Image (tube, rainbow, N blue to C red):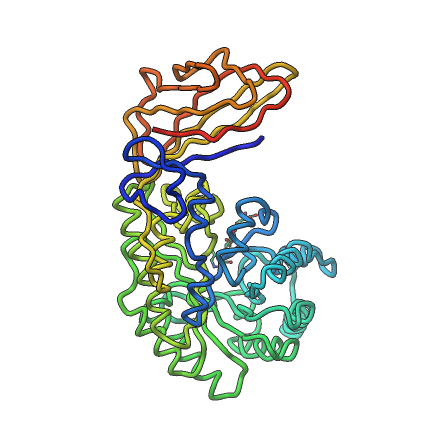
Length: 456
Ligand code: G2I
């Protein structure tokens, strides 16, 4: 299926490079990708601040628009799941590096760092490991082998490893896990030491959530790092995951980053997302922009804060929606890859002075469904995010002789090559966060190119 998109936005009409595409009165239309292409990529903005900007990715999605954005906007990739033990060694002794290799190769082709995630965790371990009965010596040896094998495989290719993930409870005590229960707290120092032996140049991190502000959990992490440093254990950084809720960026974030920096370790924001109760609306999206901006600004303010990574860059590739029913829209791009206000919040914190586009947008996407020798079925979907419509009108030009014969869920007319479709009596309203689709049959011969559509 081929798709072309046109966007209609409100307010600010004079964005660089779009003048030739202005249509109608008080509106402009342009392809989503070209409009976004006018923005300085986040990775360039970050580089100018001496920072790295990353995203978690899913290897199988690294093509098309997802691949274009992952490759062009970010300077670091974190495999969302591909390097976890359960993924790489689902059966004991039988390894699957396919997705991890794919992500590393993509990153190298795009001049990006890779953050390895994660070596020692209580989740997403293979069942042969979690269901086994092991002596402490066996468990220790399994862990050492796992770390040596995985870190060794990617030696020289991983900028930083989340060696240990989520070791603490909320009250700052150690979490009961297969590792802590079997090996005591020394599993952490040993894991770091083994990782360092396998790749002495990789930066080694401990990563956790709810450690963004100063609190009992982050203080436990602080004390652990201090202790490891004093013992000469190779620890280079702490990862603050930053799975946050709208309007709840901890006020002590920068202070907390600074206290870790003062211990002599780097800090990374490793899994940033900011979820909201659905549906999103322009007020929530504006708050989310402010929240993303304040998190990135806190990192920019501390020289040892080296990397901000978002945990998925599009709302169509986020863990949030399935884990927190009723919540979502947690990333900087919407599900159609349009940058949200949050994107511009990140850009502004990284020093962008470009005027961001208006917050709300409704877009129309044309696609060809089935096609046969003389005819085809097409459809147009009108989607709104941070904006809404009470009526709509979509027009396009058929340059190859196509002719509409019938339409449903819209009233369409064609005069020469000009097609004009307006909402039916019952579907003029497109609420913020929702979409409306209409369809049609048409004839074609020779070729059937996808036209650019204009929403007005
Ligand atoms: O839970 C959010 C993150 C918290 N910090 C550590 C991260 O590693 C963690 O990432 C998420 C992934 O984004 C999810 O994609 O970890 C989840 C598991 O705890 C991942 O979810 C799993 C699902 O539970 C599986 O059912 C699914 O097969 O993703 C798998 C692959 O899509």
